[in-house]
Length: 351
Image (cartoon, rainbow, N blue to C red; front, side):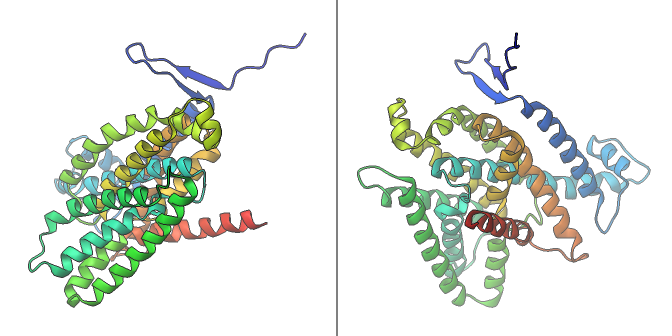
């Protein structure tokens, strides 16, 4: 007599919440492995720089324990730790944003930039730098946030013809992104050279000069947006079956699509506010997570939190190492990593 096959799923039902989560059995082990890799990468990244610090001293300094060198605490806690934690959080936000966008569009080549979110933020920021007599650096993050969300609202409204569709969202998003890119190029030609340099640095993405204030800002948004993303994972699973079948299963398609687009836009926008436009993280990290734990969004979103964060920490380390003692903007490094992978997927699809 054959034994019944062991289920491949784990189900979690919190006592005090009217929800249940079903994840692949591979997820817990994969998360443990990724967590170890992240911790190792954090220590190595913090220890590397013009002022090298031994890994054991890095760990002691992170927890506020004094070492033989009194400068260790200052270098680690005031300069390097905020920057690297910010990279980790940005990777988390962009990764989950990309996973949601790929789920909405049912297109594994999508990322947050597909709706022109980064471009919309860039247009507002570059316009402000161009026309403001004395640009205030502190306003740039909030202008970027407003521009990103406004662009998402514009694209959704333009794609509405008795309802939205994934194809129209993509086509309108690509068109708006192209128009925004042209506007940015035009505005930069009208700038003074110092202003143009400032705009280019922001547009390429950078975590240089990050502070604990940036880290707290991002954490305050993520503690709200990430749980909401997880709660909507089941809707993403249903939407992946197609519009007609989703409606047939009782899903309020347009409402959920609007909520998920707003959620993906907010996750991408808050990353843009603190580090400028960083591409390909939202595209690559969901792909890595999908290969590790499969397509079910409950496990996929949780795993993407780790893969996105790990990717950004490694990218930040490479940015500081490749042309040391100078450094590459982190947006350039993620493009160097992501563009070949994007080309590989296109080639694989064309075969």
